[in-house]
Length: 262
Length: 245
Image 1 (cartoon, rainbow over the protein chains, first blue to last red):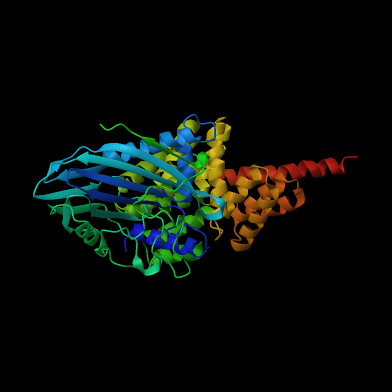
Image 2 (cartoon, each protein chain N blue to C red):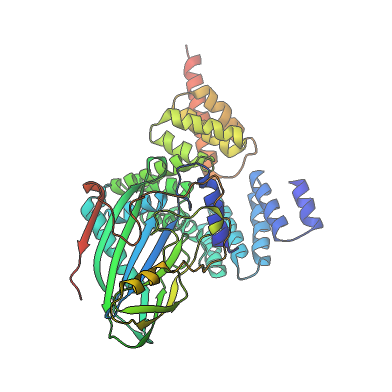
């Protein structure tokens, strides 16, 4: 086990038994990237789930005028900065050719965490156009903050007009988009890269798409019992299943911005 | 101290020297502690996390001795040994604070907290922010300390949190934490924390008792010495007033 893994395990053990704590520890920053490939476009939905302590620290960073309070506008600006940081930190290529990602939307939301504290969820949507080919290989790599302690997952799905021939990442989110972390023996993934091979699909076939999406998740990490059995799986937003967007949220604790395509 | 020294003689090496150095410091021998810790640091090798930690311990000892130049050299050696060690940021912050640069120290503390949000460092940063009049920053640091307190079910940060609650006027919570800390870790620093908390609440006699306990080893920690002697001096003045006709 790496040092980060040991710290994560210890933190999880410490806080999971408290009952309401973040299942991965109150000082984790968790991430999930969902790559969806269609005939003409690659889109990435990137989620960040900041546990209670990083959320308190983020409030300092968000509070641009340093008056001690982060307003919704300041939180939005903070989320915009995180979105830009993510865009610069991820690398996407199609058949070896790097692609420039456009940032489409950024949303943020505070969620109730342990001991009356908030957690922060940031969702960033990117996309880029691709030329349709018979066979395409897509490589994704997340270079940002590799040592950050927390859950790191990447999933890949096929959209309209393509068939996902092969990939080294799951096709469904094991954490349901960071809303329901699997308990105990399922382990904490550290996946920051993906290889995706797609083929042009036969003319639109709802059945084929349904089959693609029904492929069971591919395990890419060795299961390790990091969270003790006393820790319930987190059910922060039962209705917010990945990859849907956020659920309705209180006006003072959430926001979103739609960006013009670049 | 004698036992630790004997162990270091029988089985010399970094762990034994570090242990003996810590004990020497606690028991008033700062010079001997620095000598042993320096030997441990040199022996730990030029690279690696262990070496960096030992250099940082040496820097703390130099700060206790008031020799910031040597402390800076030790921090620089730690940086060379393991540049990504998270403890480097608060160590550099402590150094800057000792060198009379509180604003730069605060910035470094905040950077360090983003990596490793330790209550001790959050407390130091909060004090600096208040001292510098940066009320907005202080408010966020207070929120962080309050959050850490809520999440500290194991009591790992009780000492720093007791000081924080005491200095922010939450006397009941401060006293509760300080007493529990002394019960769980009955050492001179726990006595010192309880003495400060009691003194701020006007419990002079009990504060004096714990201040004496905190000074029982005459540990050469300038902050400990200053705070405890101030409590004892206040008691002496109060006693003199009482005896005046």
